[in-house]
Image (cartoon, rainbow, N blue to C red; front, side):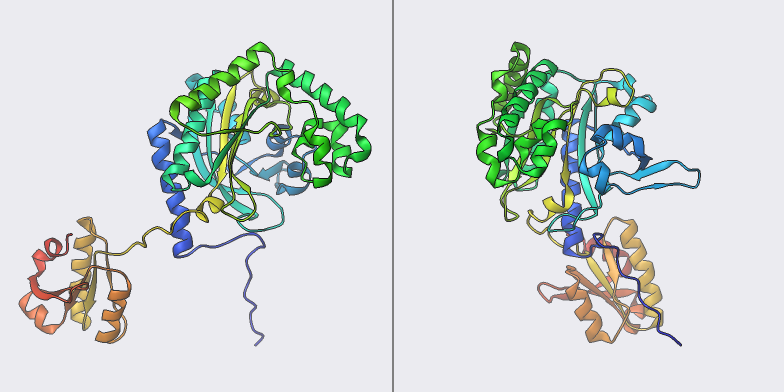
Length: 415
């Protein structure tokens, strides 16, 4: 008979066990704790959306849409896409699920997202994101709120000191239009010094040249006119209100004049929390104000702001959480003892105590398994114990052992 070939994991997908899984869920637990503190409602949105949701929100010509989305036609001929990010799906739900009645609406969620890109450290084709949004709020205090949420989350994870908040303003529509025109003229005059990618961006969106990774053209980028030269009074006041709120809360930030968002629906605040703890400096959390997004999906003008962070990247930065361990491990010796141990085990669990059973191997191996689990106590039951309706409860830290009646075991192993 031919040997059956074991299926291999899909490239860029991962399975987690032990410390890796514990780190992952420690990030989620910190996010959920912070979400509750800030009053963000937990929401769930579908993993699958109509492709148009992301094509409109991310821009038809972006790499995410043209190269990285997992899109397919279903049996009905509709084009569907596995979400590459959360914001567009939340915006779609805001329009179609009646959420507008709750505006301003503070929501948060987490889960998997999918992009067909080259896997690398901390980046996968199925990755997981934390996401927080405020929809229907145009006030600068909403920007402050999402930034404070992000800052407190990083501090909760113990990595706040290693992450720097980079902050910029994209201004209002009038500011952005004037700045874009000036950037176009600047880069057109230096087109010979631009890379092929930047030349392509020049006609489509000159703002994206500011984010160029090509070192050779950085002098051209650095000499570009800054947005501050074009800020309207209203846009300048908005940014000042955001930075004043951060200062009042004691949040450290740095101005990043080259930090941009290419799509036209972005307004005012743009930000990234950067770190060098993963090697080269990289982004661990990023977001901005997207006042024009819901309009691009066919809805009314709806100001909104939000951020997303990769769970995998955050989990690589935190200290390993303490491994989960049961309070006690039952060590039964014999079939009858195993039946009695099952009843005791059930009672402990129903009473809120974590407990397990070592049911394989001889006495030595079972005790070794109990000790390796990290449990505080081993509960040993053999024929003599059954006859007396007692168990030998051993403190695995001190080695102290004593007989305890079956109905008093829970009290004996409660720390």
